[in-house]
Length: 93
Image 1 (cartoon, rainbow, N blue to C red):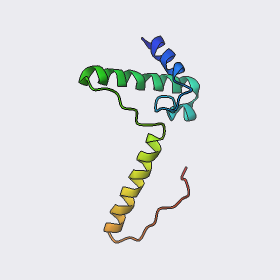
Image 2: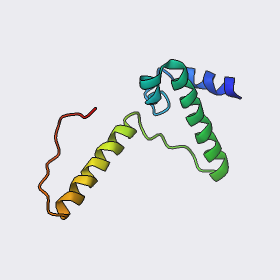
Image 3: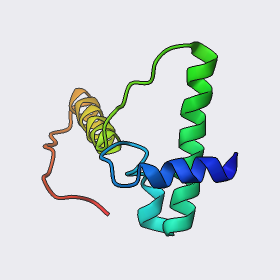
Image 4: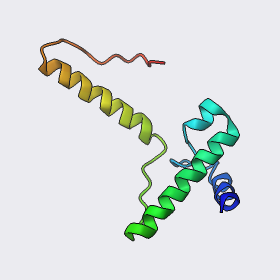
């Protein structure tokens, strides 16, 4: 099953989707990135079989959008507390 999942990840590696653009590949190398993507693929398959709902692709930039929305929520929270903060265009490390 592990081999099959990695083969599926290799097949999707040139596509523009969430499985192909897994973050771990950038930080920890190709092999760990492939295994993390295979784990994501198996998790998706398990949830499809468990719930019976079809898979909806979230997009390759889903994690970046999620992080940006989290930052906006934190800024709104701080504004409610009385601080004056504006979002910066500079990317953090």
